[in-house]
Amino acid sequence: MSERIPERKDTDPRWHWDLSSLYASEEAFEEDLKQVPAYLQKAVSYQGRLHTVENIHAYLEAETELERHLSSLFCYASLRQSEDTRDSRAQERYSRTMAVYVQAVSALSFAEPEILANTPEQLKQFQQDPLNADYSFVLERLIRRQPHVLSAAEENLLARFSEVLQAPGETADKLMDADLVFEPALDSQENSHEVSQAAYILLQMSPDRTLRRNSFASLYKSYAQHIHTLTSTYDANVKEAVTEASVRHYGSSREMAMAADNLSLSVYDTLIDSVHAHMDAMYDYVRLRRQLLGVEELHYYDLYAPLVSGPQPTYTYEEAQQLILKALAPLGKDYTDVVRQAFNSGWIDVYPNLGKTGGAYSSGTYDSNPYILTNFTGTLDSVSAIAHEMGHSMHSWLANHAQQPQNADYSLFVAEVASTVNENLLIESLLEEEHEPRQRLRLLNQYLENFKGTVYRQTMFAEFEKEAHARVESGQALTSDSLNELYDGLIALYFGKELVRDPEVCVEWARIPHFYRPFYVYVYATGYCAAVALSEAIRREGEPAARRYKEFLAMGGSAWPLEELRHAGVDLSTPAPVEAALEKFAAIVREAEELSRQL
Image (cartoon, rainbow, N blue to C red; front, side, top):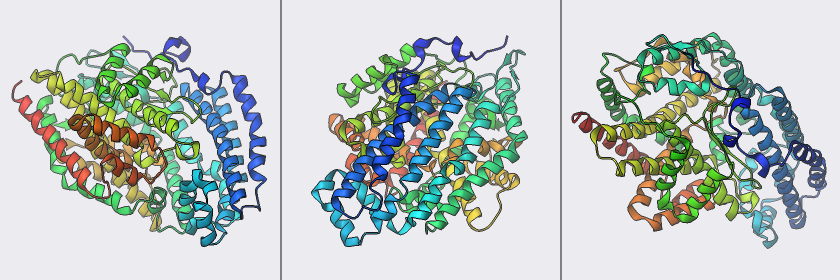
């Protein structure tokens, strides 16, 4: 019997998101798109006049108004495209919106160089003037970029090329989400299972090892067949980042990426060094996994299999909602009331369909509610994914309601904190209710997977990215062979000798979409470590820690990210949070080992 993923038209509309908080209709979207030139012209009218407090304030107000409209347009087009990446109408809408966005960015490229052409004394005056009080941090960030902002003509040229420079990532996304075709995978009973990006991890979590092996082979066969194309897109993406960093007088593309958040390279390097120092805990986990699965050799397609045999618990979407609400109760009724609203008001696109963007994400604007895309399959991992994305959405919701639009968007560096706090509160809530060894081990399996996937694996990605960019910066070429070899070596380092490195796994780097957003993956790991500290504090202290945490979320982008985290009680300028999180991982491994002896 073949498992089929439905077309979107054949899925229940009750579980589709309601995008009316963005636009009530296609006609409303088109009408707003037509208004962009007027908003743009208002901002552009200040060109050549940005040398007084009054004009700078008026320009920033006009720019903010324009950005709010562009954000809504872009978000709507992106969400609609995610519903079915094969839909040519959605692709066309997205392309038109991107073109308008690029036009606006290009037209406004005069502003930063013109403002920064004022003297340092004038800039400080502009920032400190009461008229610009609402834009003080905006101006602080701008002044800090002064050494790296080019002339108006050069900034305009770079802006005009921005859509072209995004082509490598767009091409890779289209190839992975829409064009790659995977052979069906047979299970041990000769049943056929459809393989897709959305279904792949679920297939890898199957207790049927034959199905895991065959779906693994199917997926990576297609990636291997397109590895030269994906190498080309990734190489172009790295070269774009390296070139921009050089043009802007940064020491490296990594330095450029981290400078936006006022972070030193030591934060990145300390993460990698700390994880390297705790490799033994991961090796112990790999060994435990092999023993519990009862296999002589642990293969890469065994890494997601359940540690405990027998039917895995499954949940309805309604049950998932109740589990999440209970887990988040320590954050207060004000928090959970909004979560209920999200569940009941069309914020979430729930189930998979053909062509739908795989995985899960949260997206929204200052003027809309947040939206969540997920591909719910009833597993505990699916429940955890909703809790994760709800963390992002609540971060946005609280920031949008506490900050003005120019200070609401939070940094990527703190973006994964709220999502992981939710995940950790969920798993701890479930563990509090479960004492039977086999069932408790099932839950620890989820906890261990979160650590493996978010701390160890994302740090491995960060190390891959660091090395790939460094090679280009030193004049080396990125080839499919060199990237495959680099990735294979990192698999050996991070998972140890007890894991068989199947030949297919060396091309896994090619299916990591976050690599097209340079130096983003490391924030998953640092964010997870910060979230461990915060969730432990919330469980230990209760309301005082929850209050500090919600205050941190409400800060949005109104301060530098390290300062915001310090307000919540975490200092990521030191290795302490990473060390503590990895020690917790080791403790969970030890508990899992003890439980395994009771089975």
